[in-house]
Amino acid sequence: MPEELFTCRHCGTCCVAPDISSLNKSVGVRCPHLDDDLHCRIYGRRPAVCRGYKPDGLCRLVDAPELEQRVERYLGLFGMGSSGGE
Ligand code: SF4
Image (cartoon, rainbow, N blue to C red; front, side):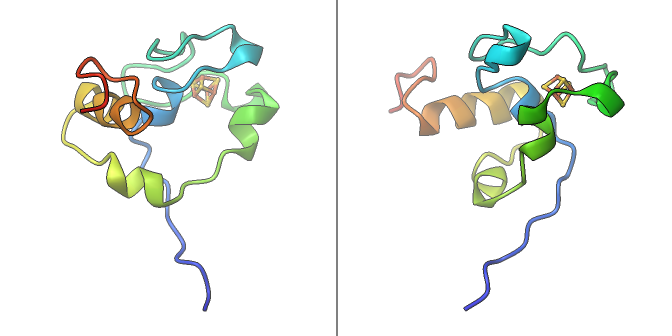
């Protein structure tokens, strides 16, 4: 059975929620290259980890109207949210 394909909705969550060591970015910290419209300011020279990131079922699981809500959901899925993953 083919895997379901997901389309990036440019929600910004993956530029805030996970840690990205090549950017010296900690968990839950907004990447300094993410602009107010949730576009990458350095898209053409973004690090390999960003280039390799592919949208998947996680994007649907974290879907919410606001970026802060999406980040909280993402962190909660990994037991790192302010609610301690509960
Ligand atoms: S470098 Fe660009 S793609 Fe990578 S986390 Fe920052 S804003 Fe997102």
